[in-house]
Amino acid sequence: MEKYPFYIQKDYQRLTTIEIPVGDIPVGGTNPIRIQSMTNTFTMDTEATVAQAIRLFDAGCDYVRITAQGPKEASNLKAIKEELHLRGYTKPLIADIHYSPKAAEIAAAVVEKVRINPGNYIGPHMGKITYTDKEYREELEIIYDHIKPLLEICRQYGTALRIGSNHGSLSKRILSRYGDTPEGMVASAIEFIEICEDLDFDHIVLSMKSSNPRIMIEANRLLAMTMLKRGKVYPVHLGVTEAGDGEDGRIKSAAGIGALLAEGIGDTIRVSLTEEPEAEIPVASILKEMTSVFPLNPLAFGLKNYRYENFQKEKFVSNEIHEIGGMNPPLVIGQTSSADIVILSDLPFRTHQIHTQSFPSHLEIARLQEELPIVIHSDHPRELIALRAAVIHLRNQGMNQPIIIKRSSYEAKPEKFITESAAVMGPAFQEGLGQAIWLENPKLKPEQLVNISFSILQSVKARISRTEYIACPSCGRTLFNIQPTLRSIKERTSHLKGLTIAVMGCIVNGPGEMAGADYGYVGAGRGKITLYKGHAPVKRNIPEEMAVDELIDLIRQNGDWIEP
Picture 1 (tube, helix red, strand yellow):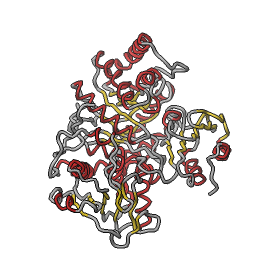
Picture 2 (tube, one colour):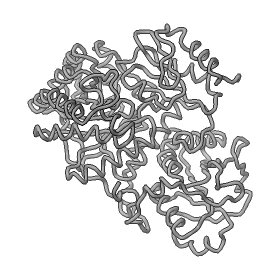
Picture 3 (cartoon, rainbow, N blue to C red):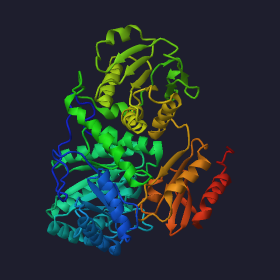
């Protein structure tokens, strides 16, 4: 990638995108960041879908997305929209489409925006693994013919189009050339953009989503650079798919979305939680609110010519001091025995302290005390960017001491503290900026702070200390009751440190988004479950009431079970 200009900006600059009309609430340009969510009701249940959409709008949603599995569901969007309007709710609706161009065409005449997935718009690709150049071009011609009628309807009704690449559902054609990479995600979307532009349609929003925050961040950065190079920058929708529930879901979402918002990327956001969708809105609002102070707070200095990928891909190894740094995983500091370094009022060893607000005036002192770890306090309003600037400047000065990143807060609301901390610390530790994490908040219990720290490290795969879960938020395609199922699986498997278990509502993104999972639990039909070992389905069509027990048996059979 060419030099990425947003990684460390002295003055905050939002990626300048074109404005796209979406009903009466446009996106991109100078408009505020828009918040959206998605219903998890059956689309044919008009009353339930309307009621949930109303709850989402009342909670602060700008847009509500509804799945339309096929033409029948797409046709029912008209009844849903009419009932919402009768009740005084006229904000935009978005149709979520997979596999069915016909459903997209029906929906485009009703709702304000249609989301299509370039990986499966013309249907599933069975069996084919390799493509000749001729076959590659022929499939693009098929896509052209399939999308042309949709664009004509979108143009007629003023409907916007989101082209949403999912890491877990790239087409076989894209996989054959790029693999399941950020480059493949971007290429998949750009192919569709080129078709749209050739047909003189540009009411487009783009998204690059993955259940892995690192992949999601890299794909969106590459997308931003690619659009800048092309000379036309479309609005970007941000989200981490299959983030899960509870604290872990909030942390994983904040780590991915927060990194990009700090860099000025993102025009709409969705926090995907395996909970009732209304629970997503407060978290998204916190992330949006964090950006409000960015334009008012320049850094003391910036690194204009810094190539961020060099720092990330060549993992920096610090000196080891007091078992911090070196080849050790990032440590957790806290006031409880579960922490790696237990403190009473302060650390049990001497350190050098640097505040990002006053940096770099302490550089000479740090150079003279090289044998001491450095504690960097993230006290600048643009915390993440200031941390990057401070750490990279230290490393450029040849200082190889381990760095402890400390974040202090008096925020009494756990959800707000968790979200803000993850948006700063998640990207920082994903990028290897720190060798130890230290969260301080007198309003929360010490054990809570330590648990949050471990969760942040786990969310960005900086350190694995517990079972990892990938879980979709559910939608109208979900074929079983996913929320209690996820809770049950967590209760029975949370002690299996290092295992990754995916709980997916359906086959649309399920098998793909759980690509890194050791085991998968995927809806296969109404009340039926298919279990996976890695990529392979090994037990099919298990009754839902038996499936959790069968999952445990599968883990035992493969030697991965440990008695709690």
